[in-house]
Amino acid sequence: MNQNLVSIGMPLYNAESFLKEALDSILNQSFEDFELIISDNGSTDKTAEICQEYAAKDERIRYYRHEQNRGAAWNFNYVFNLAQGKYFKWAADDDVCAANFLECCVEVLENEQSVVLSYPKTIFTKADGEKWWEGTSIAHLDSWKSHERYQAAITDFWCLAVFGLMRTDVLRKTSLIAPYYGSDKQLLVELSLMGRFQEVPEYLFFRRCHSDQSSRLSPQEREVWIDPTTVGRPKLLRHRGSIGYLRAIFKAKLSWKERIVCLNVLRQYVFSLKVWKNLFIQRTPSKVEEKSS
Image (cartoon, rainbow, N blue to C red; front, side):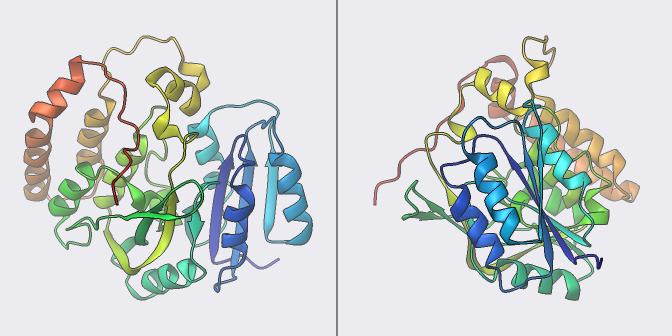
């Protein structure tokens, strides 16, 4: 059996609402040399039925079902650990990729060895798929200077690059998805110190906004979503991201001069008023705000 160039991991839990559209957008890619690894975290709706139907029709799909829900963090890491391709992409069950998403991102990674992650421009859509607004590009993620990429990554609110295409061997050197909400940013921060990100200048990713997405959950619901086993455990320091950002600086292969510059970037970030406020004041995360047209 030949190894596919690309592995796509799709972690699922009760995903029946938009799953067919998400699967169709992946299976209809112009670039076809990929495997799709689906991990069902004990869904109780029609997710299993839909996945089995699609797996029976397309041999590129590898479907795994678990009897209990171990949380999103475990499931995201599970699909990655099964990946065999040179490149890897996480896929959400509610988002849509344009037909040339993979083709464009693969081309970047094949031609630019300094790039560790390639991702397209994003359009946010409403639940019915109607265009809502265009995502903003993040400057300096493609910089040749690691501290500029680092600063861009820690100040990136949406973290859309996490659904881009990454080099599998580089991703294996990271902490992957940690068992707390927002750890996708920590992952991108680590990757930013390992190489450049490059945005494909086309709108090929459609991020669906709807009432059931994780960003609309309360803090308590988010804990259950990301890792049910940690619910109720004491959290001595809620702002775990900053600790991860510090570890990333010493984990990366940087010169001492560049490491010191990164530490200064982190110092400025941590001592900003907003970050200190979040350290001591637990607040309900903002829901996706409806934008006026």
